[in-house]
Length: 436
Ligand SMILES: CSCC[C@H](NC=O)C(=O)O
Ligand SMILES: [Zn+2]
Ligand SMILES: [Zn+2]
Image (cartoon, rainbow, N blue to C red; front, side, top):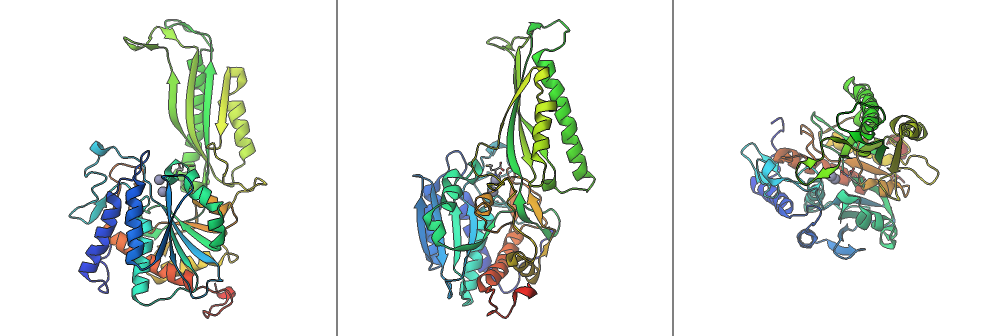
């Protein structure tokens, strides 16, 4: 591995305690659709106790707990820091993994295999480990620091981050900046995200005259649907080519991938009737739209090229059937500034650098995170998961994180939390806003 060994300031027994706490968290089966939140809540509450920090369990929907841990600042009138992570993970197909996804096996190379090792139990515990070390050194935050663990991100976050972001409790925290998840980076640069794409779910449906399986004729439902699929695939290729040519990043193009195909006349004996051309055919697509995209022209493209009524097609389009999107009330994309108007961005960049990390150019997150609920309130939110030199394996088989990357990430968070919690725009930390 290209990871360096951890510094001598950390004893090897301390290191193995840190890794074993990470493994314990990974071993809790919080996979959707039936996450064991009882166990994760007990675990996290105990972590808070071991840090001598107050924790609070909040349920907007019974059985869907958020755990809010508070590290009190010396100047609590300043806005607070919110260190966010979600406790649930996506399901895993156990038999397709080299190690069981909830065993958190540490292999001889130092890789920790587990569902959630990248997305995003790593980040949640790295926050706590960073707090543990800062506390151990006697560091005192000026700002209140909140570490929040929320349920159900993987299914939309409606009963977790969304309700929390709209709650009185949240308002009372006077949050100034939210950190949420990012992505692993195969090279040495960490990645940071200032916005995210909007999920659109598109279902297109074709109808056409049914007929004998042997007959060649125009306008069957299958033919109509396939024409659309060909056109959609050409568009997909044109977007993908921009990435392949290095002209655009993942989050800057419109992605479109087929999620399902549905057609045919079922038969109890052969599965489907083979000599009948069906009268209906449907396909579903996951589309992700960058905040800067011209959404009207995309909608026109769908209506005129992908599902034109003259080809006997219709479509249904839902922005992931959710109220909160990546647009504000006036339709403008909600993004976090990366210029000098947002001191938190520069603070993060400097802090990563000071801890010996390299940060790539700010990016648009290609999928969705709960950060959108906080951005929607006008708050800055940065997507960041300190995993460099690591293949992107979230939602994949054999998701893993190397233990040295995990340990390095803790140091990165120590640096960030220290900088964030000390930041006082009125300059009492010695820095003026201009310097940032
Ligand atoms: C929009 S709710 C679903 C959120 C999910 N987030 C991570 O994978 C995603 O599909 O992007
Ligand atoms: Zn995630
Ligand atoms: Zn995920």
